[in-house]
Amino acid sequence: MPLLKPMLVVWGLSLNATAFAAAQIQLDSSSQGAVINKNIYGQFAEHLGRGIYEGLWVGPDSSIPNTKGWRNDVLGALKALHVPLIRWPGGCFADEYHWRDGIGPRDKRPVKVNTNWGGVEEDNAVGTHEFFDLVELLGAEAYVNGNLGTGTPQEMAEWLEYMTAEGKSTLAELRRKNGREQPFKVHYFAVGNEAWGCGGNMTPEFYTHLYKQYTTFLKTPTHNTPKWIASGGHSEDTSWAEYLTTNVKQKMDAVSFHYYTLPTGKWEQKGAALQFPEAEWASTMQRTLAMDGFIRNNKAVMDKLDPQKKVGFYVDEWGTWYDVEKGENPGFLYQQNSLRDAVVAALNFHIFHQHADRVRMTNIAQMVNVLQAMILTDKEKMLLTPTYHTYRMYVPFQDATAVPLKLSGVPEYRVAGISVPAISATAARTKNGELYLGLVNLNPNQSETTEISLAGIAIESVSGQLLTANQMDAHNTFEKPHAIEPTAFRAEGKNGRLTIELPAKSVLVVKVQ
Ligand code: AHR
Image 1 (tube, rainbow, N blue to C red):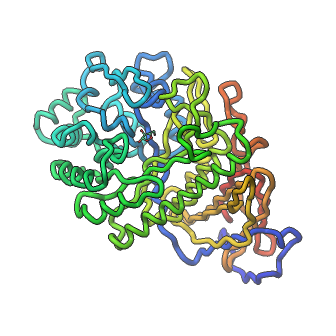
Image 2 (tube, protein in one colour):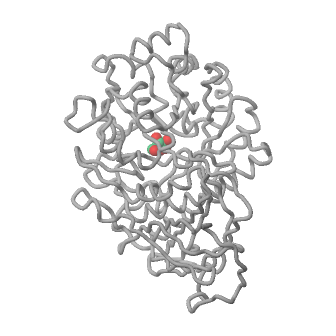
């Protein structure tokens, strides 16, 4: 039996009592949007706080069950997210990272100071080989971020040779001596990070010169050539994308972009992760939706200079950034994660899907224990955050093709002088032909009625998962790790249409049948 029955939908005939007030979501399954690159669901793991050490890596001798030093509980949870790629080793850390510190016997590696993040000791237990173990254990791709800030072109070139050389070069032999016969597969390689800030306080002009100089010397076997990523701008600044796209004509597959959502918009006092006022829920939503404008502006610039869209726009750092929790090392960026973060994640996904023609990679900051994390750990304990659950719910969108949709009659959510549309929606068809719909109601106070229609096709039912809770800051703790989790959701169509009552502050992903 076909999943979807063709039928004639006559507007206005099948309205029920609630439909007059309902927002309309019209899916246009006859036309196709861009493919939603699975890399939009990428992750970022930096040598920062307990992100790698403890959160992911406990070492092979730990009493915490692990595989090659990587903790099994965290690996198991991450596998369910189908993590497409991991960016490593930073972030700001990358521009002070010297790869030779992280190879060879672990007990002989130098101990450095992590000057960016808390001034703690970095014993280099996790280096190149360990990182590739993680990537391979998760079936992900490797995104290695090179050191432009304090490294030389020679150091960067030699790291790539160490990872990818096949012959008998000294560096290839050194890699073999360290336990890896075959070259590592480097899928993505970035030349520096945040060159405008912690990466060297450069101007776009100065960085562009350096980018061209460094990339001249970055050479790999042709079948193991990574996509080259230039460090781009942030927030409303389009000058980096513009300058780089104008002036770099080779060896640049993407320009990166960073944007963090701060509830107040102020770095000195960002806002709390929990127990925040409703005004900060609203400002967080508003500042999240600003991502759309930032991407549009950068795309407008790039579309003029690169109409064939050869160069990608990679949002390789994004997420919420709150005030540090009391009692935590301020340099560790550890924060709790609530229903608000789940809604922020879903809104960002919807924006990225809309711009998937140019936005072919994004990496949330960061994977474990840092900023908007998927997972929090406390020694041997682990919990899954609401953001984790959102990532899991959106797995079907990886590599699916966006289905254009029209939203109308969407009510505004208004509070404290802020006004944002209450509903956000996205739709896509998977390679298997299944149609998925993602919906967000960001109004924390009232449910919203949405009526879904699919041009000329009857919707029999939708089924999937709903994430919501009573409190805006509902979250999981080590004592109550299942306080907020998705629940099963199902709704039946009537006369070819389907009405969904979307609970307040909720994220819903359903398969349309
Ligand atoms: O994700 C934390 C930090 O934020 C990264 O190291 C840096 O690139 C950004 O400023």
